[in-house]
Amino acid sequence: MKIGILTFHCAENYGAVLQCYATQEYLKSQGHEVCVIDYRPDYLLRPYQLIHTKRIKCSKPLEAVVNLSKELIHIPKRCYLKWAYRRFSTTHLALTKRVTATSIPAELEAYVVGSDQIWNPKLTKGFDDVYFCRFPFPKEGRKYIAYAASMEAKDIDEKGKKYYHDSLQGFDAVSVREQNLATLLQPLTHQPITKVLDPTLMVDPKVWDNFTCKERLPKKYVLVYQGRSSAHTLRIAKDIARQIDAEVVVLGTWLSLNSHLSYKSVSPEGFIHAIRNAACVVTTSFHGTAFSIIFGRPFYTVKLNDGADSRSQSLLTTLQLQHRMIDINDTPIFTPIDYDQPKAILETLRQQSQEFITKALG
Image (cartoon, rainbow, N blue to C red; front, side, top):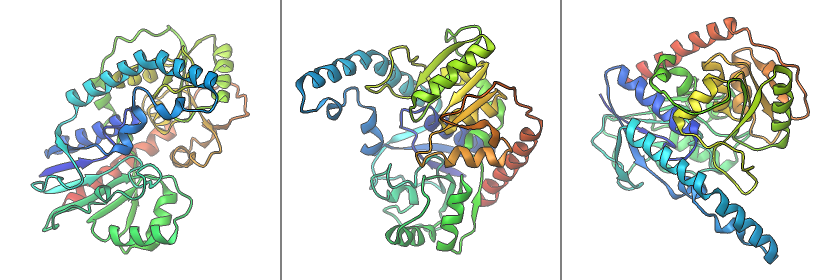
């Protein structure tokens, strides 16, 4: 079957490109002809500009000069990250030619939207019809499948409810990544809403063995990876590093004005390498948590209480690892993780998630 994937593949974010790769590789392993539709909306590209003029605009001239100097200092690392993401995409993703919302290719037999927060109107600046398979051509027997779609939401307003109600009717199968989202959406459609694993967890873990990296890292280190930044995360990591006699390595998704100069910029392959070999991972990121579990690493997920913790919390609760999510004010005593039970649960969920895709494709 000819299948097109629509997701946040162009976001310069480790989780975004790796979950896309995982979906692609799983579908290919099932004998399908797979492509990643190269749809790049401005709202995904804008956060990753080399210089953000809005960040340096302020009423105080001295502050503007300081902010501009910080922006300029980070440009070399940002350039490296842009090159690394572009190389990963062109090397590992089967991209179509660049398309817009009005030129989505119509010659495919099935369209898989997801994973990532493709249904989060805060990120997509309102609802993006493309990620709801509302294309400029009739469906005519094509299959529309949502796999592990995600969003951060505790409730949906009336306008949102109508949009979801109307849009979900067009899908042949719908799955989401978090239980709270399934609970929110189920009353809006007769279509069953299934909870499945993120693609990075759903795919055979051996797929990550395809990546090698010569990234220079300390012999023993605590890895800090923040999707959302907090000084408490670094404090916790330093304390754990002291406990186990290790160094601290800090990775940045994208370097902001507040990023410390010691942040390490690595490729997506380097990200996998860094987590696989860490003595411990301290993270605020869903995919930082997910890859720690994939590689069986000790980790702590820091709860920032900013309304965006639900993705990691849902995963950890499902795998009976909720005790590894800690509050920002905690100072944990380092302990290893017994992965026997979580891995058994994960394998069952992996099979169920793969069965969802198989059934959805018919």
